[in-house]
Length: 433
Image (tube, rainbow, N blue to C red; front, side, top):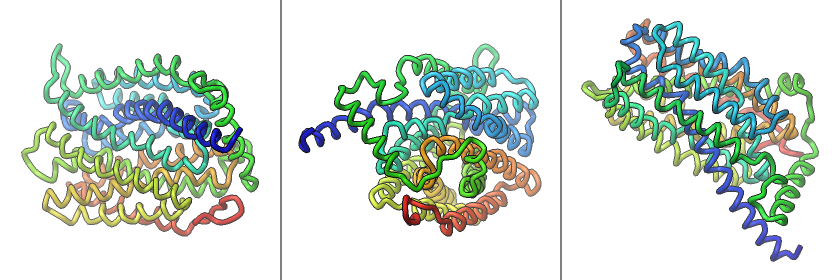
């Protein structure tokens, strides 16, 4: 193939793959995260109706991640066996069913059970998509690619905040409260997406009928070159991949990070409502959009810079430092606008961390090993999603204020910064950074 022709094929292929894969995965993750996080908005009505204390709500928010932890690695192994198309469809349909069923709980125990089952149903989705992207994008594109995909997290809050609170304030018929209608309405898209996914998702470039034959051949060849060029990576079995010391270290970093990330995420609506009295639920939802809009922009720009420089470790660490400082300062201010600005900085740091971090396992592990390891890191790390909401709930119940919990989360983010900053991983033949 001539040089000019090869360049033309590269441009057309990368453009087609990006617009076919990323927006679609993005939409799936928005649906996923709305179903996962909308309990934070439901709490504005649900806690009173179900007589949930702050500690009980923290437990309900966090038990999702116990189910997630237990089934994450098995789910990712199943994805490798059955293929992304079939397994992602299964995940979407089952979590949609559980999410809609959550609208009908009548007691805290029923809520705990369904939140646990929601974690079981969703387990494997995020790491599965991360590995799926490595089948379609070269290593030099992966931080930016993951950033566009994971930008769905803050965007899901941008969409979910006003949507969830509007439903709660305006839809309450047939005897169901607004928060119940919200859970029911927002759970349906996952079931629909699961059915659609079976007919839309393509497992690998070789199967992509929407690419021209020379485009399929070029992409498959590029992905294979990436794999062959990484001569110093490790090829490990399932248990060896999970117990690899660097994988366990990354799991510890991600656990500590997730305590801070998901702690603030689940409590965000109640924190914002505490900044100013008299806010309606919908006004809380509108204000909650601001930090997530800032976080979305910061995430994409920071990841682009990571890809441009090829540096991963420092790009993972520095956002954590910014988040720790801003989150710690939030509890010390009384002015609502300043508090919202600090929360925006904290979330910008929290989300900017994600994409460079998920590039780290691929620096020292083969693609097949990284698939299991990313699932393990995500699984262990997401236990922080249980600890964070529960810790803030316990501290709020004990002290009467959520701000003591924010200081604890700030300290944990600072610790994860230090661990990431001083870590060393191999990037082929040299250290990261």
